[in-house]
Length: 92
Image (cartoon, rainbow, N blue to C red; front, side, top):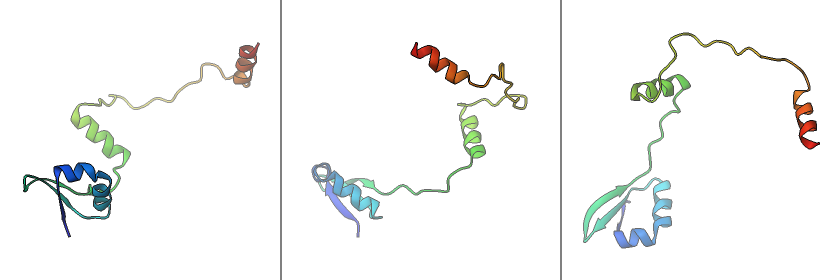
């Protein structure tokens, strides 16, 4: 059953409105008796994969993929205990 609230009521009972929406109900908000808005739960789709998200960002222009394949990171120095030495010097 869809509930209808005036703008004033929806503001005053916002937590209740959200609870109803979370339970799957659709809530209508009215202004002077005329419906002006509908609040309903967001339909959750399957979580997109990383490649799908990257494709979406690329289509939007928010991401430019590199022209060549990714290269592995090469360590500049491989000296064990570097963190311990850093913390020891920092504590002095």
